[in-house]
Amino acid sequence: MDPDNLIENNEETVLEPEQSQTPEKNIKKEKKTKQKQSKFAIWWKWPLIVLFVSLFLSFAFGVISELTLSRANLIISIAVIVILLIISIIGDMIGVAATAASLEPFRAMASRKIRGANEAIILVKNANKVASIFADILGDICGILAGAAGASISLMLITSAMSNIVGILIASLVSAVIASLIIFGKAAFKKYSIVHCEKIILICGKIMSIFHKQNTNSKKNKKK
Image 1 (cartoon, one colour):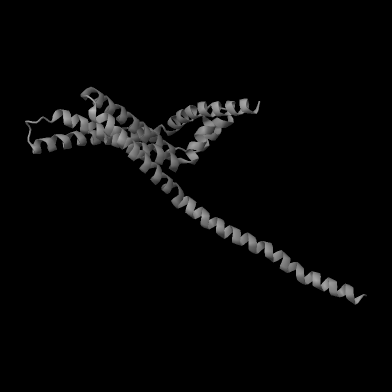
Image 2: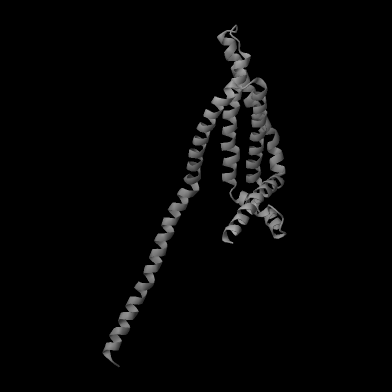
């Protein structure tokens, strides 16, 4: 046998294990970096987004409510509080229903091509985000607007003849009544949202499907 061939064969046998080990090391490093990124994304990415979104919306709606509701009359202020109460309760119901619902019923509905089932699957898969948007962010905005409406009601009820203590008591009573009504409404419908979570999420999915179809139709028209 040729000695040159022997040397070449030995070199190949030595190099092969080294070449096979380097991709494995790279894969392990990539996995470690992905795990670090995924940990940050899971625990901190969404809470930070919620922080900045709620800060911006709370400030914007606070300014708007102070400019508009502070000069509103009694009937408009009460109507605004009732509307905010309903919105806050519905938002809390959607958030609770998203966390309580499971995927299996909606997957069965999607296989039967029921409208809104695919959108409902998206809502259930992102239950933590849905709960944050509807129960937390929407609840904060409703609280700010309800507080402004309550302040306008307090100003109407307080007269110049009243003492400062009576004025403080009236303002505190109005804000306490508004807060207790919102809390009562959420507590009363929380059990309903848990029991009928599939029905609530399917209704939300059907509403989402309307906008989803409009987007798909607009994309098809652009392609044409």
